[in-house]
Length: 420
Image (cartoon, rainbow, N blue to C red; front, side, top):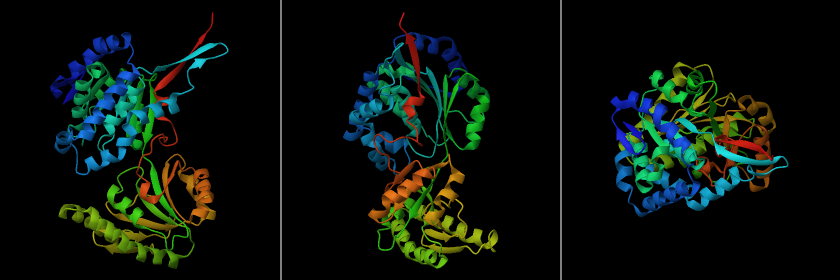
């Protein structure tokens, strides 16, 4: 399906829609009155009120995956009018104003093509919201697993505020349709691409030379535990199970501040029942439990077949597992409640982690409060961009940066105007 300026069209009209965009709709929209920020804020505020009232529950059940309602409730505070106004002031405040030579004006890039991710429900709509807040016309290439959620949100948003319709388009087209993607990219002043290295490289090849490439690539996150004995591990276990290892902020490796293998073994034995408890609470269907068990079995088989000489130890549990590896590599773990444990003493942090600089995102730090500032400073110097409690690794906080940057600044340009 295609969403074009408030109208839902069949996929068969893709070519004609892009032709109309290039010849008529983009020039008309960009040459007309700019998109007023208050219009966007009012519309998002109205959408949020409908979400709070339960009016959107039917839409969520129809189009969103299980658990989406709970995920929306967690991010809802960030979409409040107050939070959005604070974000605009933080990210864009001070960029415009008088200068010695005259003044600086902040304008949108113009047209943004968003190549949206599919690892979290609602992200395609969220990236378009960032484009709207900065006054851009937004073309969204939907991920394969979207199932109609983004188009339903766009339709609802433009019903609440028809003035947003010319600024929102969505295309449910496969990534292999490079001809259509190239035509869309040719319209864009900025290409916002989410995904791994292959996705980023593909868009670099498709984007025209004059377009600004805005990359939100895959990132790696981990937990760091120092002097954890006696501390509550349940929040970390719940995070591992609930995110399934699918997010950039998901814990892939639990690093322990120790050099001793025996200490790491003891941790695994103590952590496994905590992880099992989280799996029992979170996996409410037999299918979810079976999925975790399947990946746990995969971890065991990998050790037997692929890494028999490594000395790794696998601690299998019910619908989950903990694998102790001897190396210190930051890597992806098995999904859905299966996690890697490795040793990384604090004196090695600045030696080991900079190898992944540019790919690090979140560190869930668990330690005595007296050590937190010291260890947080080390992790930050090593290249980590977010340092949270382990239970909060995948929470989002109003006003926080995205992978070490303020996104809205990337979607605008500064125009300097000299006094005559």
